[in-house]
Amino acid sequence: MQTVKKDSLLKKYHLKDHLPKHVAIIMDGNGRWAQKRHLPRIAGHRAGALSIREIVRLAGELGIEALTLYAFSTENWKRPRQEVKLLMQLLKQYLRSEVKELLQNNVRLQTIGNRKDLPKEIQKELEASIRATAHCTGLTLVLALSYSGRADLTNAVKRIAEQVKAKKLDPKKITEETITKALSTGELPEVDYLIRTSGEMRLSNFLLWELAYSEIHITKTLWPDFRTQHFIEALRDFEGRQRRFGGVTNIIGSFTQWAR
Image 1: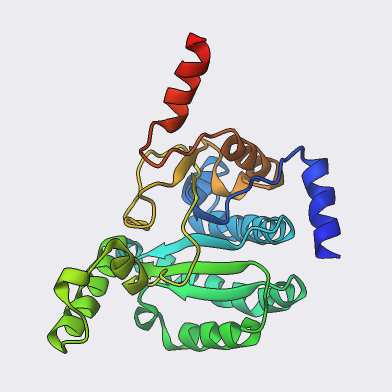
Image 2: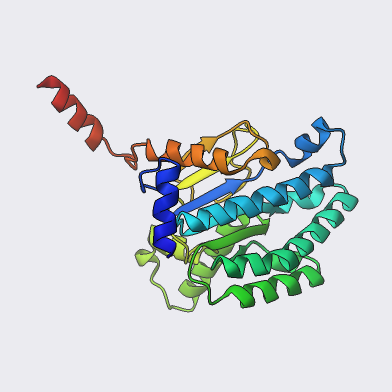
């Protein structure tokens, strides 16, 4: 049934089934969206939560394996205390209201980042939601909460150093795969595609190791306005990319064909 629906959506949106396995999104622009409408910043975050619901549902229906959303960075703790408090309340509301939706769509919830930084009540809600969806086999939804790419790399190095110290790992056998597996994203598919909304051109300390060979899509659309049509446009853009991972095989092949 899921395959039939996926095929129908691919046809509807003129996609070729050459989709990324793992999409990461920097959901930027909530504050500017609210400011444009002379609304408090939290109104932008609430509107952004509706975009999350729509994109999560569509990603699952299209058969994307993992979707990682940059929900709250370690730097976001520097925001005004009242805004942070309201953001935590919104996260709690989202978890309580969306678990049923996640279960209906066979979506498994996970998190990356320092969950211990979050208020106790949020930690409990997260743990309950993760347990409730653990058996789901469709899309894996990863919320990056109190997350820092540099901190995650630092922690990975510490874990590897502890293995070396305990003589469980030979330093000469440390590879890129060793580091990848030591990261909080180690069990997830490689990140194929990064989408950033609001037009900003930076990574903002997000998935610094994982994005090494990811394709990147920047849109000026603010996150609360980012809906189905924008996601489909981004996916069409991905399908048109040639991924060479630093190689030149396709370039040489094209030149050879032209020379003939």
